[in-house]
Picture 1: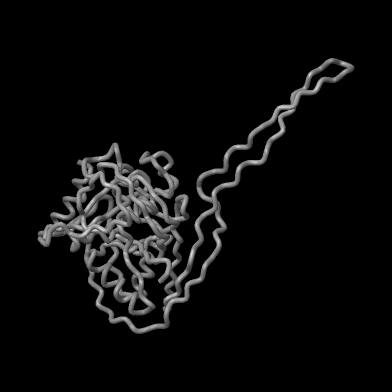
Picture 2 (picture 1 turned 135 degrees about the vertical axis):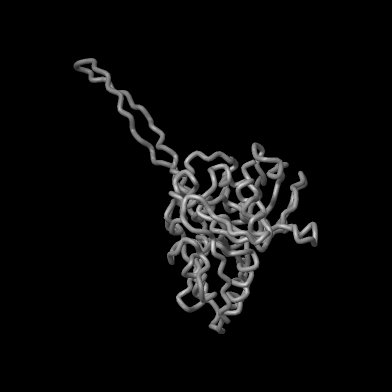
Length: 322
């Protein structure tokens, strides 16, 4: 039931009808940029050490009580001596890629690891839970692609909510692939979308729950967005230093939609189960117009590649060695 709103969006766009998103005036206008890219020097990645602590607070200091007695008066005094707090886990390192024309992409080196994918309390498509291993580190952009970044590559801005630092939206999966193609042409290549498994692993950042406690501090959802997108990185990051993994705009992933199985997987990338026009791509993370449940790390949704609306954006990924 929670997916009906976006399913309606998909149906309206598939029939060519104009879609209107509530809470703002005017309908969604889809613009297709056609600017031809020019060849530029290869990007120069630079590694930066992490300087911020994770949003997880350090453990509260332990205390050691010490009792003393005054020999003259017999008065007993207890003094509590605080012990040093455990240090917060450091963030993963970051890299910056300068691809010219003022376009800099800051990325986090997401470490390899194993996690439980899915949501035990979610809808049928979010199950069954299964173990997934990300066998090698990968790079994921710290923020969703902004309108400034999009315009630097494509030459025009299709977004409904206009602003350089706002996430680009109203982009189809096919639009995103064209953006990545042009970005690769300007640089040494290697740019791509994250897989669905990479996305959920990075969103969880070590968390094993799907609750929404504290979500207001990290995500723009229907409850706090005031009916619009917001500048990227204006909320707190997750434990990997990634911003807006939940809320603001939904994010396209590389995978086609396929049902889960209970089998363990390593670095999964799901091919299309069908060559029909009904085949859909995965989108993740919830948006400014969705409730908190849609922002849960294990929550899945899928749309046809030609869908575009003011809820849809993306972020970039690439392999560490590229």
